[in-house]
Image (cartoon, rainbow, N blue to C red; front, side, top):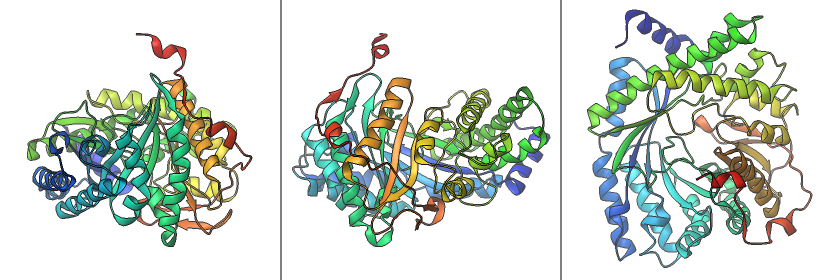
Length: 454
């Protein structure tokens, strides 16, 4: 039960510090939508989504109105489509039909995004999974709000280098297919290692096979709240700093818990998890980069940035898990370049480079996220970036991801504009030294030895 002081604090966080619930995400299992023909699968998918999620948007708006808490996005995740369409899809074009069905259903119920046009290939690709991956350029260019992910590795299985090599070419093809819009299709795709089953954020969200028939997951935000709280910690030691972040994360997560439980009750769908990630926006004052700078950095990318991010991530989790018994998803601090004003500024003036971003992914909650790179970057270089990031996740037993946008027709120093929450980003250089002989060897990088603890 919230007391009056918590109500006042929450109002202040919303009105002055840009606190919002970033997303209410309904996960829906589509395993029972499998059928002999792809047309029947599409019909089953459309009918199930429009039945289960028909009240999702209106319920979110009602909670916003009743509690005064902004809920920025309402989203859906579904079972990885490579599994749902495995028996009926005989070609990549068949999978594209399913992508269109997802797009139509999501638009019908009014959500902002739908995720789960995905494949889990951490050990090897089935024919259906490879067909889905090869369908991505067409599927993501012909749909508006469908998001996709491919999990290419895990701590238990190693890294499937065949899919990593293929994805370099696929990302280039997606960029080409959406070249008239700054290669926006790549914004809707992410490659993962150790992808979680309950992530409510996009583009990597999908409804894992370990989940039930339907679930409500909520992603909170709040870097602006943490930033304002750190004004009181100026000049104080790390003990005071950590306590301030931890207490603030607790308050932010309590707001998410309230929204999640209320959405679950009103929709009659079980509550799943709170993802307590600090998710920035391009707005001034809503930046993870600003938080890191208030910790003591002149600008993000300076020496000490990785240590500061590690401390921030840890304290956010320590505070959040005291506020909810069901914390999941990614949970930590996101470092997307295009969605964070201070990160954009640091990348623009060269203080923040891709090598430093890669080091930061060792301790953040995701990976190389929303990074615009030159359009002439080779497919093998993109595959090499994915392999490096997957290796960090595999060895460190954490989720890592790559969402890079090779912006066709643009080069270093130019700007890519994605709009809305996706923001804008300077195109930054990447090391173009060839790794083609490495990524084209084929086969699988084996799992590290600590994956065999069981």
